[in-house]
Image (cartoon, rainbow, N blue to C red; front, side, top):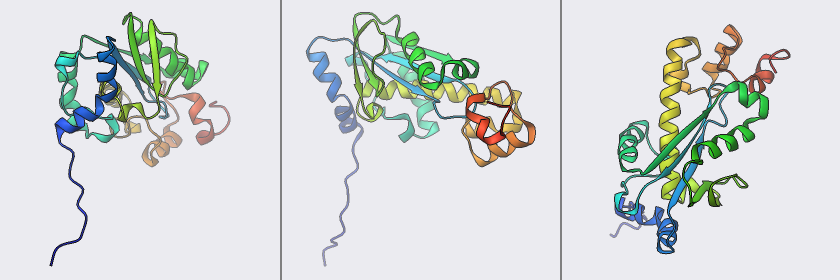
Amino acid sequence: MQNDRSHKRRETALEKLERLTRIERGLWAEGFKIAGIDEVGRGPLAGPVVTACVSIPQDKLIPGVDDSKKLSEKRREALYPLLLAAADYAETCFIGPEMIDEINILQATRRAMETCAAKFENGLFLIDAVEGLRLPGESRALIHGDALSYMIGAASIIAKVTRDRYMIELDEKYPMYGFARNKGYGTAEHIAALRKYGPCPEHRRSFIGKILGEGYE
């Protein structure tokens, strides 16, 4: 008796590369040089928001790139040096808690995106969802762009690994919050530590007021 259960064939690395470069290949055919921009760290209670702007030549594409959230930490770490070696442009920008509290997380993210992209001139920028940035070239915002565009996916990996490494370093300075594990996000462990020890300088006061009550906003 034939097994009638449906089996979805797993996408090969080459097929994924073809799918994720569909947008880029169309733009390369039009003569554009392309960079992707993405951010990591808009939601955490602590630590910076980190953005990356990355451009990889068509003949140096690294298989395995995807939205960083879909990749394991081990896979992101393996891809990170390969992407940096292949890139002809790769810049990151950190904006810390004090500035996030001063101008809000959206404006901090926008400023970080503009800063990391500032030296990539006369190109076309593919950006995950954010519109209206002041960039030295044309830009196109793509909803869920890190899952649709190779360049945005590459930027998401660079930003994610960069920020995660920074939060692991912070864990050595502030071990009570578990930053190496939670990366600053509001896990139960992190919130319990906040209530026990209070905030450190890496906490975003505008994010923790509802947790700790008045006086921390």
